[in-house]
Length: 78
Image (cartoon, rainbow, N blue to C red):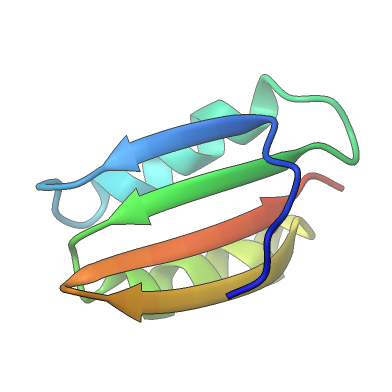
């Protein structure tokens, strides 16, 4: 897993669809262009949801990974 200079971290553990995506959208709106958002989720549906969110919004999904039932996403705000 790469290390990014994270500007904001969002903990969505225990939340189910669509909450992780909705909270990601709310958080990224509050950030400046170029900043990095780290999202942690336990919902397996987050994998497809976060990729779709990235395509729809243009915010770059820099990396995603899974470890011990947690899904970690890094977004760069467009």
